[in-house]
Amino acid sequence: MLRSSLLAIAVGMIGCGSGADPAPSTMPSDASQDGTADAKGDAPGDAVAEPKLDGSSDGKDAWPGDAAQEVHPEAAPPAPLGNALLLPDGGVTPLYRIEDPDSPTPAVAYQSNGDTIESLDEQGATLWEKSFGPGSMFGGFDFDGDQWPDLGLVRSQDTGETCGGKPVLMTSIDVVRGRTGDMLAAVSPLKSLCWTFGTTTYPTEQWTGLDLLFGKGTKTLAAIPYYATTGWYYAFDGTSLVQTGSLLYPSTSAYDTTYTNDKPNAHGLGHSFEEYSHVPNGLIHEVGGEPRLVVFTTARVAQYRLTDLAADQLAADTPFLTANRTDLVGRDYGLVVPDPEYPTHVVLLSGTSAASVFFDQVSGKMESDPWGQIERHLTIYDVGSAAVDDRFFSYAHDSNDGFKYEGRLAYPNHPMVRRGAGTPSRLAYNVYEGGHWRLHVSKPGVTADEVVFADWFLWDIQDIDQDGDEDWVLSPSRDPTDPDVPGWYFVKWRTVLASWNEGALKFDEVRKEEGVIPHLVGAFREPGKTTSWGALYPVLTVGTSTGLQMVTAAPGGVIGFLPLSP
Image (cartoon, rainbow, N blue to C red; front, side, top):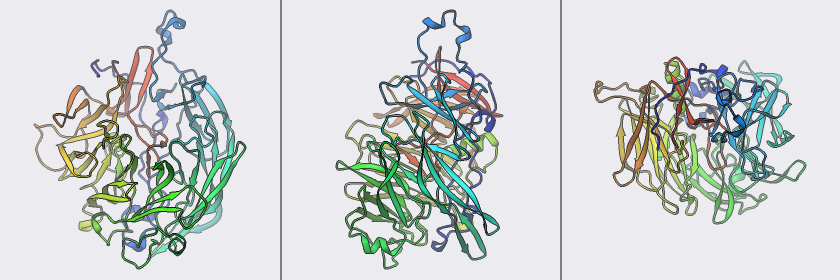
């Protein structure tokens, strides 16, 4: 575990200039994120934060490392490989492992610099650099099957039309092969939809970085627009992406008339579909040896076979509303992750990312996600039985918007407390209750609590020192000597590294460092983990000639590094 002392190195300021992502303080496209659209008829007005992954540094200089301190750098052992790359400007950017054993480099980073994307190896050397034109970068899939992470670009073009005084855009998606930088067209352009609810009129872009879904063990990409009626499957034929099938989204009556396994919707409206079903939140996951698209959307979770359109393409349909509240839309935003030890379970932590607290902590303002994704609940979906175990926490608009923060769920980057292969994991996540953060740890495989730790906040569960044991990265939000009153939203500038003690059902503190919290930067979604935020926020580590170091942030936004012992 982690025993060395803190080495805080002030190398830059948090913000776009240091490779960090902007806080998602403005929800794109849709009006309801200001909290005004909350009825079932207002479902389209509910966009999801999609933080950008574009780094700000050009990354063209060699990675600095510690080479200047080495008398014989050619004889030095290779630096350990972290999950982030230190940039010449002092910022950091995510580093993605390459699974190809014959690759000349073990990991790659992608930096978007305006119209250009640069691919960097684990030492910061340029692998390729190409101009693709304007576009918002995302990625994490491997559509060509070469075991390199690939990426995508969301394109937008102004149509010259307006909707509610805002421009109507034509959007599309291109994909880029991570190994070579070759670009391919992915989907046909679609024009923004224009909505009017009451006195509010606004547009919604149809293609975003959330709209390509992918998973482990398959090269298939599922492309489903933001407010879809139809989706499509695509596969790489060695030259281009070709459509291999289509599916019907549960937003029109065609869903009812085509599929045999559709179920009546959860609002009791006399049909199966939910008009204006939200953007799909899910991934491709193996079910009984068959890859299926598993998606949460408005008031349901559904499984689709990766086949062409047919009556049995919909393998399972489970309409549900958290707390069985028919007055709610049925939002299923948040983190979706299959249990790696018990893959029959797919978990949805419906709420906001722990990164929202990081952004607020750095800015000193509660502003990065003021509505916390509105409907907060924990769901465990069994892909074999299609059963749902759901636990409700809060609805932001209850009590005249009195639950903007009270009852919000903030998920860590990785919530699984593993107990061994074939055994359901526990879930660890944060809920702001009674003006205090409380860290919930569930019973194995269910939503019910096993234990709750008051005034603790969990950022991530990850083997950050690569010793084979998972580490809990936490911060307390209140000390025992502080007044026991509501209002402890901001955490202490303190990082605690701990290990989970399954026998005692508690975490054991291993190390405590004052004055810092983890520095978080948006990373690509993963084949086994996705989020409607559009980006994951793992605790970051960089490799140097002296060992692994965790990336930290101090008050004022100063980036530092915490040495880790193997």
